[in-house]
Image (cartoon, rainbow, N blue to C red; front, top):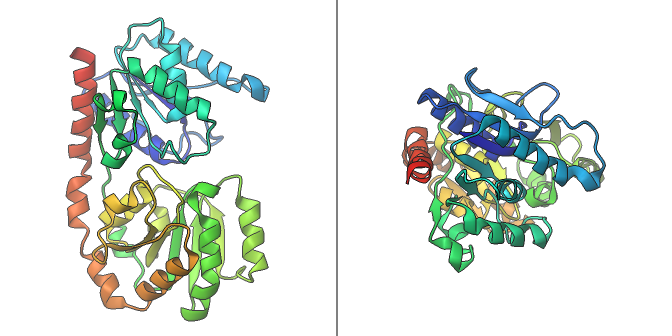
Length: 357
């Protein structure tokens, strides 16, 4: 089988691809992964030796030829591997994969991992995916709300599968206990709403002694966010060290995950926090946070793009150790729902049904 993704860096789709690949290789499948980019230090997520990686070796290409070369790469990998099923992730990659297999009878499963109505992509990509998706054997969405937003003609072949997630070993014992250590994780771009969080930090700093926020991630908005932080006098309060060195390292010593996204697909960091007992304050954006957070039980939801509501919730949780303690003890429900054994079984059902149905 062949899985196709944007690249081999850190990210929610990349994490799920790595888990599916390891699972299917463990079942004896010949598993291949095609990706468009490879970090200098190699893949952020590890793969078993039995899994073959196919990064695109394109060098520096003119921007106008990027998508053409990605399409060409996918076609070349398919021709080389001759897979019996292809599974692709994310809007542009889905579209390119469907286009690359137009003259091939290999069954294709596509998976949308973001909010297609809100993400910053040209409408042509969404329209092309909807048109080409008619030939996909199955479409995997992450929430019921996301499935309902598909065109009516595609909903019948859509499956809802949440992201597999289990606690990182030893993380629970390393969580903070004083309420002042905040953490945020994600790409440094507008979608993730870190500008809203930095605005909220001016009020949080005044009301929570010794508060500190660490934002883990890389992205195009880094300089703008650093300028915003410095302009607001938060240089000693907000740090931005880049990505965490290992998956889950961002959680060590944290008291609260703050998640200010404007939109999502299914936020892995929120899932990771809730299965590990780390309290969460999150924007109630579409989609994902509402499916993962039970209000007052394992986190607090606030209106999206509302810095005042975000700061008020963070201050409340920071100043209430009993509430944080209760939230730390409420991880079991999400652990069962998101258990990798169960979720990967759902992927098996879709992939095997597509391949042999």
